[in-house]
Each structure stands twice: as structure tokens, then as C-alpha cells.
Image (cartoon, rainbow, N blue to C red):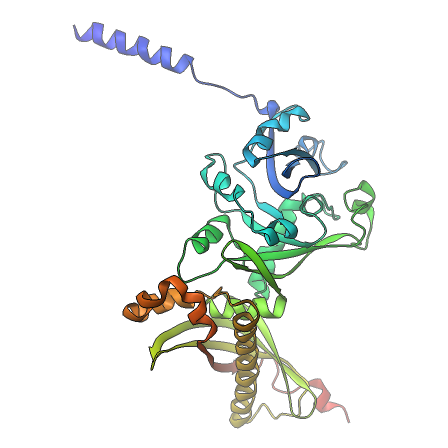
Length: 396
């Protein structure tokens, strides 16, 4: 009896396995980038950037363009995605998407219903970077080539990661981050912005790969500010870094501070932490951003004797004042010009003064507009690099 059961189980298993779908590797295109623009004849124009298969092999790679870009139009992203094989011979795989580029015109209109498809689709992971194109089209972002044999989407993904690690001007907003902010009662979404530099008509041509000077490029430019689902404003790179200070997202950066004698000094930040204090006082929302920084003096053109301990204290105070004014300026700009709590201060208020926040949760942005926003900066300069004195002090 047990033998018969085992035999029947084996037959059933073979039947199930025989029905498994298989896809040959030489019948696949791996999508690394997606771009959404307004369509000319239909609602959307969706473009995909795939890796050129001839560039993936060690023996055959290196002689041709590293990426292929193809576009289709339709009234929904899902419709267009399924129409891609009207012009492409292989099945498209979307699990390795690194970048999704969005045209500014689309974001200004606030018609972001395509995000629902991106969140639901089982092939797409939710950890790719969302970028907003403020000069040029989304198509141009994923089709602009530079020397180095790297696909445009991979280049932009690495560029954002390295810039964030070294300077702190790239927030690397993922799709899941935007959706979480859209559904939050105490935070408005942001998105990383890029611009297309140079002659966009030649940026996708083979000649661009053979130039020593990068004439056509995609540049990180700052941050887009949303109110609900509509783009309402843009922030530059300095404002973007200030935003990242408030989010405790600065890893490494450098703060350049002017001196009283028209010189300047650079504080290289190697350790940073941020805490938010939010509460109501006499009916007024109060938010304080406390930033703690450890740094090194990397360069200095001021007249300062670094052999004296009191000099470090003076430099720390100058750096604190500079950064405090800069962060408060960005917070004030967002508060007055856009009225969008992109900083998530409402979420901090909910955690720290829950009873008060619950009374205003439905109109928190109105409360944010009248909030008192302050920055409290503490900078500690630990050392001065390899030398105590500048070579300029030794010039007679």
C-alpha cells in the first residue's frame, strides 16, 4: 500500500514539474532603467533601457553601445509594458530596475496614478531610485551615454550613491519612500532631481563615447518638493544637503566656512547625528533640529594659529553659526514658499506630543506653516589633518 502511494505521489510530482514554464536566457532582455514622459498621441510614453547583450560577454564586449532604449505609448503603464515586444524581440525582465525617471511636467500635474501599478507589480522591486527630470526629458536621462562602457541607468544609480556618501546632496528616494510619504499624515514626499547637460540630440550617439571631455551628461541637481501628489517646488544642492541634515542622513561631507579676514576653512565631517525635538507650547508648534558633528580641519586660508586650543573653539563657533543659518534658511524657505512638511516634523510631533498632534492631524501642513523652526548645531573639531601649519605661513 505504501509503495502504491509513493508511486502515485511520484507520478503527480512529475506531472506538476512538466508544466513548469521555462525561458531561455538568450530570449531575455534585462531592464535597468525606466522613464515616463507625457505621450504625443496617448496619455503616457514609457521608455525602457536595457543592457546591450553583446556588451555582457567578456570576449565580445567593449566595441558597441552598452545600452538599448525603446519607447511605446499607451494609456496605462501596464498596457505599455505588455506592448514592448511590438518592437523588441526578447522578453523583458524588470527585477533589476535601478532608476525610474519621471518628467517634471507629469509631476507638476499631480497625475501619479502609475505608482499604483509600480507598487503592485510582482516583477518590480521597490528599492529603485526615483528621479525627477527638470531639464530635458525622462527618455534622455536613460539614453545619455558617457565614456566608460556603463549603461546610463547604472551610471546614474552609482553616481547618486557615491555623491551621497561623499558630500550628501543625493537623498536616493526609493519608490517605497514616496508612497509612504504620500500616505503619511505628518510628511510630504520629496524626489531627487536631475538635469540633462549638453546637446541632448547627440547624447545618445556613439560619438559621445569617444570624447575625452564629457560633453553630454546627466547631473544631479537637487530635490523636488511635493504637496500631496503634486510637485510644487525645487531645491538646489545646498538646500538638499540641509534637508539631509534634518533627516540624519549625512554620512560624510565638508562644510566650508568664511573667516573674518576674508579667508575660509574646511571642516571635513566624518561623524554626524541628528535628533528632532517637537512639541506644542502655548498653542504654537515648536521644532528644534539638533545636529552633532565631529570633524577635521582639512584646509585653511585664515590667519589662525592651530597650535592653540582656543583657536579650535573659535573655528567651531564660526562653523556652528554658518551651518545653523544655512539649515534654518532651508527650513524657512520650504515652510514659507511651499508649505509642505517634507522634513517629517509632523511624524516627530506625533511621537513626542501625540495628544496635541491628534487634534491637528487632518490639517498638519497649516500647523507646519506657523511652526517655530530652529536649528541647534554642535561641532567638535578633533584634529587638523597631517599638518598644524599651512604652507602659506612659511612663505616670507
